[in-house]
Length: 176
Image (cartoon, rainbow, N blue to C red; front, side):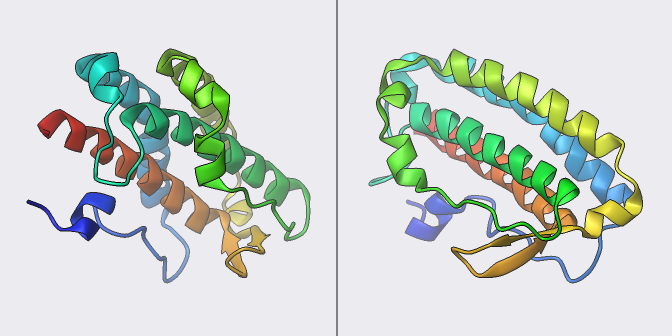
């Protein structure tokens, strides 16, 4: 049986960059964002509603909650990118992920709703990223919850990881 950390972080921790990304690294992370909605949809299709009703680990979210969470998280990420591109080191608004996952729409709406949102959102997000000049990648936002200033390079790497991280959680459900 995998350890608790292996279940919580099946692909390991989020990357922490030591400097700016190369154009090739950015392109790879952007492609990961572009591919994620279809990958999540395929995983949801393979699992079906019955399997998505189970948590991927003891005390963890259900597959259903995971998919809705990715939509919530990436919607916030998209807004954070836009704020960083239009303001000088804006302070972003943190949110309580667990509380959002417990809201009634997460329980009542099928994952298809969040998958459709993710498909459109990621199309817009990647279109924005595809047209950024290299200097914009060092623009920042401030997260008051963890008291960190984050570059858009770091945010790109983190949210690409975040998608793969939760896709791996769905993979754990498939293997259960």
